[in-house]
Length: 484
Image (tube, rainbow, N blue to C red; front, side, top):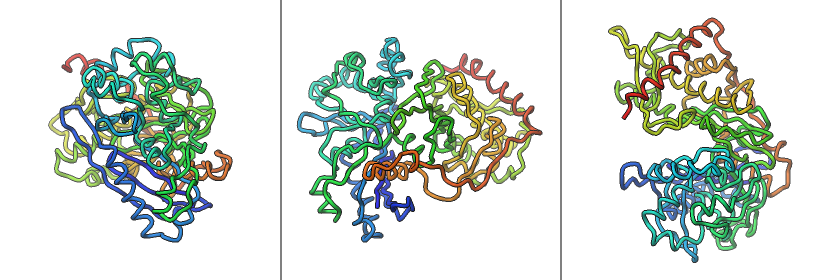
C-alpha cells in the first residue's frame, strides 16, 4: 500500500492505493483560512498537522488492515506559502498563502530586477514566496530576524513526518528563488531578499526519497518506521502525475475555482512576458508550463449567486447542443488575471447586452468567456514553443458537456474526458510515494487514465467562435483603460 497526502487550502486529503494503483480509500481533514485584513490570506501550520491527523485517522478507521501495509508516502500541497521557522523549528507567524496579495509592491520591485525573470523563467507574482519574505522584512523586522528556515506548506508536513528540512523541484520553482533551468537554489536571488541557502531546505527530485517516517508516528499509526517519504510535488504537478501528463505535449485543462492549462515539457521553455508559469515537473529532467485563469468555475458561481439559480441549473438551460455566440461577451476577470495579462487590477465585464439578453444568454457568455481565457493561455504556450494536439479535462466544471464543447471549439482541440476515478493531486502523490519506495520507472507508473469520451471541436461553429474570440481579445485594453 502507498499513501498520498495532499495539503490543500480547504483541507487535507489522505488517499491509499495498492501496488496495482487501485484506489483503496480516502480520508479528509478540514482547514479554514484567516483573512485579518483585505488581501491577506493565512493559515496556522499547526492546523495542517491536525487536519493531516484527522484525514489519516478516518482512512485508517475505514481500512485498518490495508493501512498497516503502507510502504511509501508521497506529498502534494498548495504552492508558494511562506512558512517561517526559527532555529528550534518553531513557527514564527501564520503562513502567508498563495492567494495573499499584500506583497504586491515587493513583488514589483523584485520583478524589476532582471535576474529574477532570467533565472526563474517567471514573473515575480505577489503570490510567490520571495516577495512575501521581503514584505515580512519590511513590515515585521523582528520576525524576519528570527527566520532560520523557510518551508513550503507540504514541506512543513514533511518536517513533522520525518524531521527533515527537504523540498523538491516543482514546489521550489514557485518561490522565485530557484534557478529553474538548472534545478537549484540561486544564491543571487536569495541574497536579493536578504537570505541565503542556509535558510532553504535541501532539494531532491519529486520521485526521490526525502526522509523516512519518524518512529513515533509509525508506532501511532501502526506502520513500519523509516518507510520512504517521497519528495512529492506542488499541487498542479502532482495532479499531472495523477493524470499521466508527464511526457512532452501531454496536457490537461482544469476547470476548478481557478483554471489551469497545464503542459508537460521535455526542456526548459520559459516565456515570462506572457505570464505563463514555467516550473520544474516532479519527474527528473522534465518541466511544465501553466496558463492560469483566476476565476474559472468561480465566474459561473458568481452568476449563480446573482441569479439565485444553481450552477448546474444554469448550464442545463443551455442544453447539450453548442450554440453560436450571441454577441454578448464576458471577461472573467472578477479578481484580476494571471495569464496572459498579469493584471491584479483588471475586473470583469459584460458587453453587448440588449433587452433580449436573458439569463441563458448571460450563462452562455460566461462559459464562452472562460473558454476564451483558456484560448489566451493556449496562445501564450504557443509563443513559448509548446504545441498541443489534445487536452484532458478535469475539475468540477468538466461535468458540463456544453462547457467542454465550448472549450474544445475555442481551443480547436479535442478534449478527452477520463473514465471515472480519482486522478487528482493525492493520487499523484501516492504514485510518487510508490516510485520512491520501489524504484519503479516513473513513466511506467504515471500513466494516463482511460478515456471515457472525447469532445471534438464543433466545425460548423469554428468561424463564429473565432470571431467571438477576436472581440474578446479586443475588449481587454478598452476595459483596462477605465479600470481604476
